[in-house]
Length: 499
Image (cartoon, rainbow, N blue to C red; front, side, top):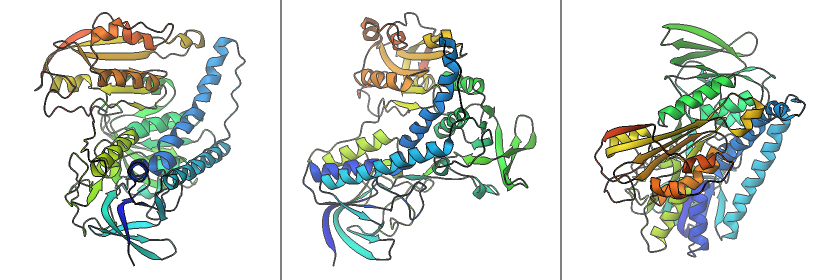
């Protein structure tokens, strides 16, 4: 016998949990959420409440970033009169404590759903038709749910490149539970996005020899060019060996039990072999849409990415089926999935059609030190806006580094549309960049002008005060884009996807 629900959600990640608990708790809808059994490494049979962010993404990654930063703190302490004491980290203990915290959070997310009145069902959800979802449990039992509406919130999954021996390498899932690499061992990371850069810093801080294999000439494509350069310089200063214009060609197990990474360098027109204890692929993620019945239910997927196609309201081509989060491959960030879930519920149950706002979304790369950004990059401003832009830049040694002797400088960049005096982009590489950028995100959401930044009194002494004391532009650049207004919805079709 089928059971009937107002909403059946497949996936208990950030977006699915937010949408489901609001639908049930705020609007009184009868909701069920289907999620795979909990585990640290995702697969066709392993998932868990909290999804990628909580179990194998943002949360455990940030915990490991904290752990890796202690090497920096120990080294810097000597300049402040402390004796340099930096014993090697107990990585097994670190990973075990991280696992305990993640398991706790997995339970918390289940409780959040239950307290909101959402039924949590463990198993694999498969869409049979526009109003029926089948739950296939690990014990072989099958259950069918009837739904007025179905929400796809299945997220994404890390992928490996199609090279020989790729199965010998790991992804970020396994990297977060990695505790068997000998101290000082070599770890190669293939990739140039934020996951690759963040793990390079984590492993280096924990004492490993790290090589970053980058196909292009710098990491973090899509971020501001000058920030990319600063991040590259900082990685090199911290002992991360960046191999640019380099592609992996194959992986082989060597006689020592390690991995031989074969590569080809395009600049040198020559190949080589890097002997590694482990190789991590950070070469992208793909929407998790396979094997859940979407094609049979008539849901349209992107031909290339297999992402679920949705309109501005997160509605698929099937009237009763919706999708949010990474499975739609729009802006793949946890807070964005939360925003999409909230907007969807307001549309579906609140009688208030709501479009998620992707403009001026702040974000951070937890490199060491971190990169924070909101709004347009310089190149995007040139391509999209009409008129001139002023570029303000501040580069300085953080006060802490004056005594520690660390050879790193904070970099800040503000982009101002001259015609309107609006601040259209802020970018920073330096300590506390993520914390500072959250406040600047509010400012850009409010369409703040450079004059308003200038009128704000700075907090002294702090790095953040630099944002309100930049008096003279470093340069003025002419733009040839389509839109005369920089943001705020005045111009139809304008959208910032800088982050």
